[in-house]
Length: 203
Image 1: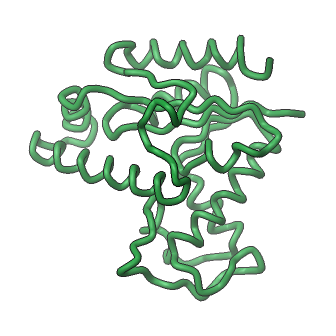
Image 2: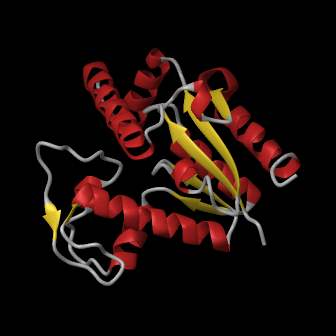
Image 3: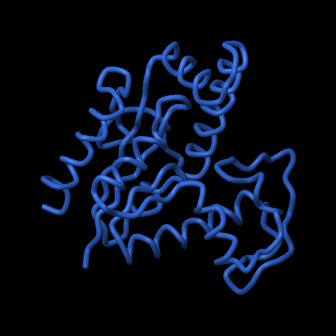
């Protein structure tokens, strides 16, 4: 059976994770985000926290740590970021074989582009002022903290995506769809994605 996967990339503070979770709940399909780290470690037989700081990070050519643990699914003496990317890729491909899902981040659109799966690649954006307000509310930050956090996370996600895919994070030529969650609202964005899943994917 050919499965449907909604791949969501997102600007920090745009509500991408919440939108993905609500879409999965409304459609009754899988949802995968931060749990991909634990699934990747399990796939690689890694029990330590050695990969925990490498999630959605590009490899730094000037500094990286090597990992010397894991099972036969791990290519030894790789930088932690490279190891985690390959383990998460294997997990994402396995998920796509087993179920319809929403997958947030982790270059899922790139990883699945040549697989026998129907993909809808989406980028969730919002104006900076709205994203700052959201982070202040959700994570109890002041404006300066929220602005700094957003800048850091957007740069990290952009570097990660561009490094591993050689693509262009956040640009219209990279995705099937770009949605402004401020204009549409969280529920409006969820409704659009659910409608596309039901009516257009797999046809």
